[in-house]
Image (cartoon, rainbow, N blue to C red; front, top):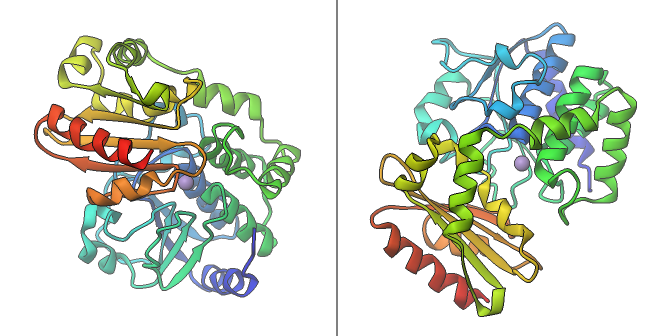
Amino acid sequence: MPVNLGLFEEVGEVLASRNQFFITTASPDGDSIGCMLALGLALKQQGKEPTLFSPEPIPGSLLFLPEVSKIVYEIPARSFDALLVVDTGSSKILFHGNRDLWRKISDLVINIDHHPDNDQFGKLNLVTPEAASTGEIVYQLLTCLKWEINEPIATCLLTSMMADTGAFRYPNVTPATLRMAAELLGKGAKNGVIARQLYSTQSIPYVKLLGQLFNNLQVDLGGKLAWSVLSRKDFEMAGAPEDTADKMVEQLDMLRDVQAFALLRQMGDGKIKVSLRSRDRLPVNKIAALFGGGGHLQAAGCQLSGDLKEAEKKIVTELRALL
Ligand SMILES: [Mn+2]
């Protein structure tokens, strides 16, 4: 992946010359939390004072990560020398769209991300769409600055990389991804432990909800299109909290001939969260954008309100048109 050394050095200068950093993301997942923790650990090693903030609870599968318990869920009422934002494509989703809030934290915003539609909201934008995970960019930053990557940092970064590549199964993996992952293994990160934490920690409500997902499965176009819906009733039957289905759309990827697939989830507030996925570079982010959402070419999302059946009709119409 292309490396803009000048930009890495500029970010390095900010990190070296300042002391108090606020690190956050719009949504906590394996990539974003891995990056936040890796940056936090690396800055501490340099004698700095990082504060890590998550706007939402950390998913249970990530609670094994080093220093994850130090992440705070409330924003301290003071300013910081710089605000580092990782794995977040748009300032509109940062702090749930509260721009004043991040201006108060710091006007020196460093945006580290790999979403192709990143709107370059930082003062410094370390944005590399070719990177399979933001973890790759953080790895390159630390390497460029010659900051030591010890075992805990390596664990965090390998978690980032594995989370965003389905443990290196997705087509976003590049030779560079695997070279970096190899270096991290050499530094003591354990892929077996991480894989088990990421993929084999499902609760009984999750598996029950998964049953509902397959029960409600619909296919069309000879199996090229597949989708499912999860209503409030499905969540209630499974005894599952609403974040249980956050990544569940990926399960439809096991279908042999599927080209595009979607999951619609009815949330407690009546909103309908839509996750869209595709193969062969079908741009499902265009469909997400039609409904005010966004994301990657092959993985995108949006939110609709109103009736679940109506939302399903709208999304399926667009998916049919795309195929
Ligand atoms: Mn990511």
